Amino acid sequence: MSVPRIELIGVTTGYDGEALIRDLSIVIENYGVVQILGPNGAGKTTLIRTILGLIRPFKGKIIINGEDVTGDPGKAGRYIGYVPQLTHAPGSRFPITIWEMVECCLLMREKWPRIPRKKHKELVAKTLKSVGLDERYWYRNFWELSGGQKQRGFIARALVTDPPIIVMDEPLSSIDPAGRAELARRIGEMGRDHLLIITSHDPMLLLPYTNYIIMVNKGVYIAGPPNEVLTIENTRKIYGDAAIPVMKHVHIADSHY
Image (cartoon, rainbow, N blue to C red; front, side, top):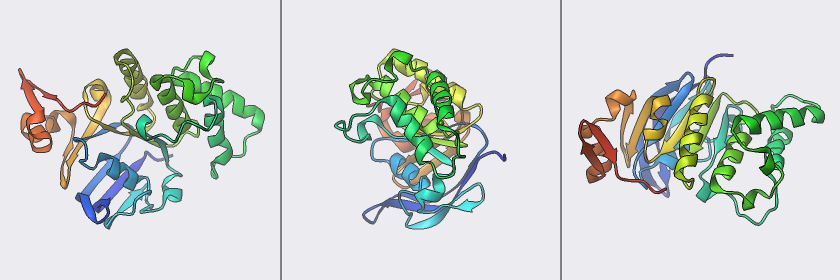
């Protein structure tokens, strides 16, 4: 299998006629972590929803592994698993366990090979273990679990069909500090054989695993390796006074944990 590759060609996208991302042309490829950074309302979630095909850009194209998936979530979904923000997850009234939620992806995925149901158990268990979710929580009501346990469930759901690309929207938000650090480590490990595209307010926990950074803010974007992008000059272009120099490093005071 070829390494994953996403091409954004002249993409301008937004909502209700307002462009939040303008003329973005960039290539994201190979395995590892790509972080999309920017303040609230900058267009981070809009950008990933455009990559997912959930939003059709005003202009431009999204090409994944050579296929035009622009505005087509069915085509994009052949390559991408999606982890939503916990605060944007579906309502809490529908009773379901984490096990059921993850196994549903095997049953619904059109291009997933026909695997006997008895094999599903082995695959779901392996995936839940890989995200560090204790077996005690596999069969509990999903909506009664902690934020960190729910997030591990969403990651397992995206991972179980083994897509080459996984998109995560603020995966470390709404989780306690100790849980964020441990989950960041596991996400970093996933980058060994997946392309992970992750939106974030604070890049630091995932920075050791990050190959590439895209900073956006309402039409402005800066992209490149972390050591080239995370400078005082660049972060102030994106964050303004929320980018604070501390010794030789920059701190972004724009968290919403």
